[in-house]
Image 1 (cartoon, rainbow, N blue to C red):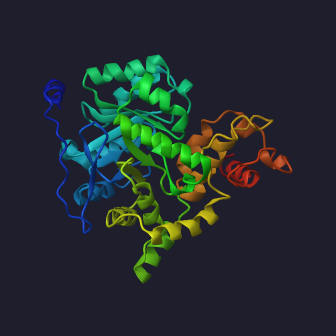
Image 2 (image 1 turned 90 degrees about the horizontal axis):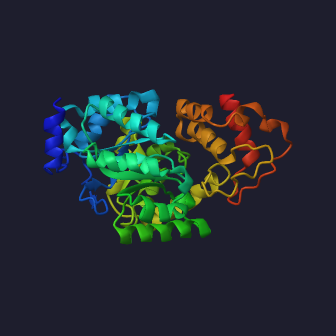
Image 3 (image 1 turned 45 degrees about the vertical axis):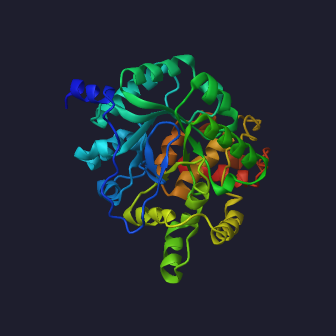
Length: 376
């Protein structure tokens, strides 16, 4: 690989992203990603749980042109799998990665590691990952991003967050990011919390910020396999596909980063582009919402600091969701291992009931005990 020649190509502006040849039975639909000039398939490939290179190659062959990974996924192996899958077709697609580092030195190191593992001189989008409070993003971290962009190591600067409303000023003023990845699903679409997210999305659209939706499946509790069987037997849409269509029901969201762990999941995901969100989809999700309510953290922040013993409540609930919802135990275990020591040293089962109440109806005591049963 010639770093100098590739960098010159980038600076010359000759890196127009082309979609791979279409072989999908469903006509692919594209949207403009904010002001970036990138055209992205409405359904993007979230790589985090993919260890089978052939799944990513199939996504590429079907015409999906947005691939989303991160430095720590699968202990760093995920970027290697994506590199192998793309091969010589790297420039046909949009590649996004991220660092979850908490200081400038760490994110600088992880950016360089990502470039090396992907065997590329540039990332199309590089996110500061999982930043849910303005204080999580230091000026030094922003400077690392800006310098990397100026050096041609990344085309567009991004940030991922679970709490968009509280990050608006950082995004639009201090950070001036090009692309935002936001937790956005039908499960968080109701009430004041959902209204605040929709208002923030309006602001992002007016500012020309590209928006990528993540966690659109309601924590993975939509029973994808059962849904697929339902579709094959009845021809009716599944809740899995309906959830994707919900996230794409307006153009404030331009694409989605959706987990595609196997070919079945991939083939089902692209069905979301068959047609717009419908009344039938809405009814199907309304039924599933009743099932999700006691299980799924909406990341609203109401429980932050509420536990008298200092337990990181929402993070523990999310750890349980990785195993019970998404079916990715290793990812949940890794996230659990990075929580404060109190999550391992204090047992929630010792409390007769939880002192914290979830305004969205999550059965917190049950979910916290479950997380510790899984990982302690």
